Length: 172
Image 1 (tube, helix red, strand yellow):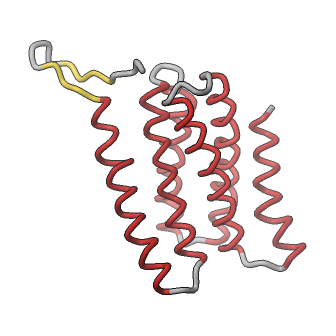
Image 2: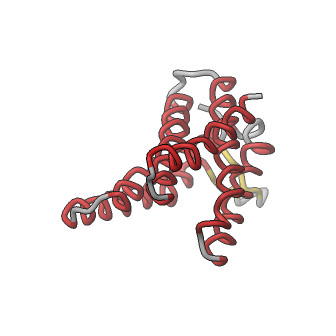
């Protein structure tokens, strides 16, 4: 049910506000991304620090599923074919992780989705007209990306040489 509400809400942000306030699609899409990233990164941080239960995290991911589906519906109208294909792959991987891996590896998946925090400087950079601010956002973007999407996930993965098995640590 929350998934459908989220789908309608994100569609309203994308199209309803555009008609009402005559705003360009890129700005509204950035706001929608920022809203989704705020919710997911906050909930993942709280879950990883044992401040919320997995049920609350699952609720946040239902909202995110609505965002992802809405994004897949509207992107063909506003992006190039190559960009749409990349987003399609990215969103299907995200939907797979939410639907099938979240219940099996909640800590690992929430650690990966915490990397949505990277979208803050990315979207602020695209919304900004100030070059100094844009350059600062670029530096923050690269640092956050390196830490949350490259370095941090490897702390939860280890390889057992004796048994030749790759483990995903999922205990807090």
